[in-house]
Image (cartoon, rainbow over all chains, first blue to last red; front, top):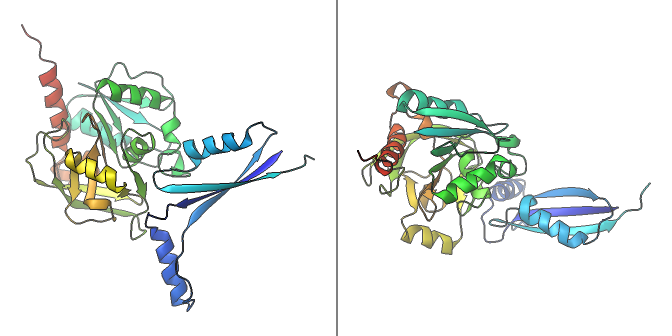
Length: 83
Length: 227
């Protein structure tokens, strides 16, 4: 089996309204070292043994998990030993 | 003229849309479920607002894969009028029938109030009953209506007159104050404000009714039967 961790974030060029609200809040808590905050999504997918895991995950990201007009995605694949 | 009102799990403006067509415009409206397989019998397709599939993941991202969407894409290609309002607009974006994407409102709040739109293009089949530059009052009701597209797309939209409505005072951070856009062919319109909620003076405004009247007039003109 595979455990896939997918991270989806707004592209660098796209303003992130949630991120700026959180940054302002951190500043008001005196964490002045915070220069930027980007909010994203984290998803965990459990996959049966599959060939072409990379290709399948990329397809899933492009089709559904991320909207590539405004979002970027990255992922990590971990092999998990079945029970 | 026969209008299909598409109903997804979580649509909640379908009844308003039906009322606008059936009672105010006086034409035939029919609810069409998300899992139906044909739209051949309809002259226009309406995608209502709401929270299809709970807006899980992103607004419209799951609805765009509903079985009926294959037919919506087909109808759009055939040149039938397709109108997506609010969540319906988000679905059209996710389906790639219109360019761009929606972000959370700039102030991160859900906003529900009437506001003023400017008719930027009154030569579309949706807006021919309006004056160019006309100010109209139409309510918004959304939390994710912050329209975004890249510079190239924006230039393209501008130069081809595809920005149909703009906000007179931008409520949500949308790029270039955009409230509604059409596709290249001009038969697919997406807009965040709700024209179906402004079809009678009792509702505070009847400015939205002109949009449905435009559609009807254009349809009649293209279906004249010569004796």
